[in-house]
Amino acid sequence: MNKKMMTNKQIELCSFVEKQEERILAAERWIAAHPETGFQEWQTSAYMAKQFESMGYVLTKPDGIPGFFADIETGRAGPKIIVFSELDALPCANHLEAVDGIAHACGHNAQCAAMLGLAGALKEQGVLDELCGSIRLIVVPAEEMIQTEYREKLCQEKITSCYSGKPEYMKRGFLDGADMAFMIHTASDAAHMFSCNTGHNGFILKTAEYKGHTAHAGSSPDKGINALYAANLGLSAINALRETFRDEDHIRVHPILSVDHASVNSIPDSAKLEMYIRGADMEAILEASRKVNRALAGAALAIGSGLNITDRAGYAPLRNDTGLMTVAKECMSALAGKEKVNFKNFWSRGSTDLGDVSSIMPAAHLYVSGATGVAHGADFCIANPMIACVDSAKAQLLILHDLLKDNAVKAHKIKEKYVPIYETKEDYFKAMARLNMDWEMKTAQGDSGELKVMFSSVERGRDK
Image (cartoon, rainbow, N blue to C red; front, side):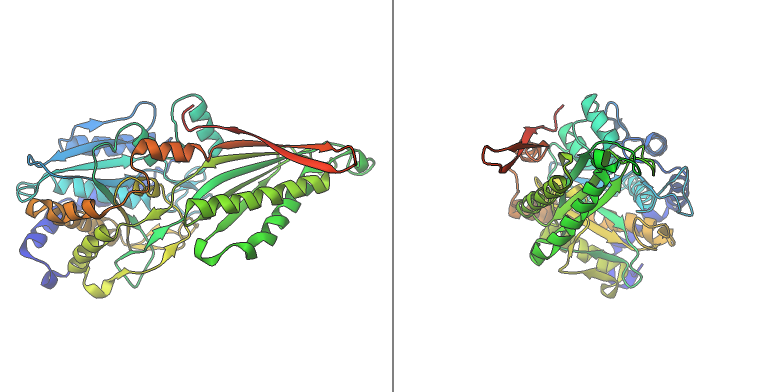
C-alpha cells in the first residue's frame, strides 16, 4: 500500500479491510479446498452465506441454484452499484489442489475471499457517511461455460433459463435497478498489481454431432459410415478457414472431439465436436459461425454421414466502460503506485459473462495480480493472497467510495455517457434467444443427378 499517494480517507478505508484479513485469508484457503463447478457450488455458496450472515447481512437467494446477493443502503438517494464475485471452479484433474478432478484454476476463490473483506469493511462505523445511493454485493454461480449437457438439462427442467450465472441472475431480476457493475478478477501479472484492457470476446457455443453406421472395421468397412472420419474432416475444414478471419474481429474457434462407446474393431457410428466461436462483436461471430457450418457440412457430405448442429448463446462481448476504468485506475494508482497499474488498449480473446451485463449497463472487468501460472492450467494458483484478496478488497472499497462520494457525481457522469447495446434486458434476451438454434442436415438427389443440401432449423429461446 502506497500511503504517500493516498488521502487520509483512503488510508482509513483500507484499514477497515485490514481488520478482515483473518477472515479473508481463511476463506481463500477453504474455498480452494472445496472446488465445485457451475450451478453446483452448494458448499461454497453456503460457506459464503454463513460468513455474510455472521456480519449481519440479510441475503436474497435464488430458487434452485447457488449464490445470493446482499444490499448496503447509505440512506441517501443515488445510484446503485453492483460488485460481483464468482463461485465456480473448473475440471482440471492434474492441478495440485484438485479435488475429484476439479480445481480453482481461475482464481474465483480469491474473488470470493476479497468479497468477504469488502463486505466486512462496509459494516464499519462511518464508512458510508460521505456516500449516497446503494451497493449490491452479488455472489454468483457458473461463470465458466462448461458441462453444457448438464446446463441444458437444467434449462429443460425449467430450473434455469440461461447457461451461465450473470444472465440467469439478470433474468431473475437480481440486477434490476442497478446503474453499473464491476468486479476484480485474479491474474498472474508479476509486473503490475492491477490491470485492465479494452474488452473481451463474446461467443456462440456450437455442438456438431456426426451420425454414421457401424460395421466390422476389418472385414466389412465398406458397409459402414465412419462418423469419426467425418468429424476429423470437419476439424481440417475449420482449420482451412482460419486465414479468412479478419484480425480486427479477433475470431477464435477451438473444438474438442469426443467419441462415445467406440471400439477399435468397429466403425464408429457417432462423433461429436464441441466448440466456442469467439469474436469481438456478434455480427463477426455469426459470420464465422456460418463459415464453420459450411465446413462441417462439407465433411459430412464427403463421408456420407448425417449431421446435427446445435447453437447456444454464449456470452455477449464485453466492452469495459471508459468512465469506470478511469475511476478504477485512479483508485488503484493511489493504492499501488502508478507504475504498478497497467490499463492498456488491448482486446482479450477470452470471454466472461460480465459481457452480458455490459450490454445493458456500464461495466468493468478489472484484474489484480497475486497469482502464478497459466489461467485454467494445472499450475495456476494464488501465490500471494495478500495481493489477490486483501488488496483486491481495498481497491473495490476505494472504487465504490470514489463513485458514490460528493453526491455520486462520478457515478452520475458514467451513467449519463453510457450508450447501451440493448435498451432493456428484455431486448438483450430477445437478441440472445435468436442465437439458439438446432440444425439438421438433409440431402436429396435432384432429377438431373445433382445433390441438394439443406439445413432445417428450429429456433429455441433461452426460456424453456
